[in-house]
Figure 1 (cartoon, rainbow, N blue to C red):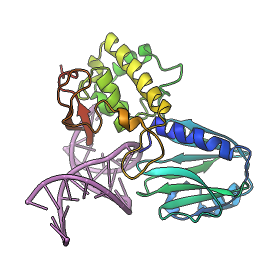
Figure 2: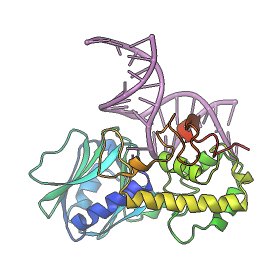
Figure 3: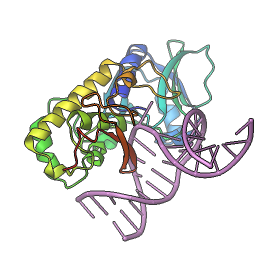
Figure 4: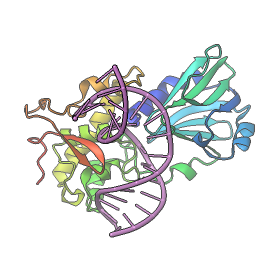
Length: 267
DNA sequence: CACGAGACCTGTTCGC
DNA sequence: TGCGAACAGGTCTCGT
């Protein structure tokens, strides 16, 4: 579920609920959710911490505390919600943070892939990430020059968080379609002009995702509506909005991949 | 270095 | 209707 726009949406929605509040205690309902440190140390040290800020880096949520950072990665099925203390926890809640506002933050994660880090030094977790696509360092020039350094299939490279941070399966398909590039084309063959189109596509698709509060599919719904505006993702057999050709689904890097066979030619 | 397969999990949908 | 297979927004590790 959560790619950059979804995580950004969550960060924005929980920020006003958290900033200035104090974490009174934590309940860890599924121990492996906590990647580091030990359960004991975490519970001890998180208690009494006041929330300074809530931000996002790539697909990580960064809850900035007085002396620590609480980094949360939602992976495939994670979600965050703030509930009144009167409301009982849900079946797939993995971590609860009890707040001074008589509410609690619940990290709910059906598939248990999500992870949480509690650390003084966020860079110990985030160091390998590539640039944020919506920040100023990310330009078509940067993209062109760095695509050229690799001889890789375009889609797996865009999904590689050490190359660019924040794209996932949905938004990558959408970006490649908008830029009229085939997911299997080789990164080093992308022209300067194509890199410009791709850079533009990445920024506009992510911004649209954020503007629409992310995408919500299947049983997980958070109020986003970008799923109603997909150009290719989950539209196999339906007409391309640009040319009318039927959208095809293929597998690239073991991920379901959607392309318009007319707009996105492979060489 | 690049890539595919398998692992980690649970739930829903698909195909017979 | 029932039941197993396939598949799902992510990332890591291993073998080739």
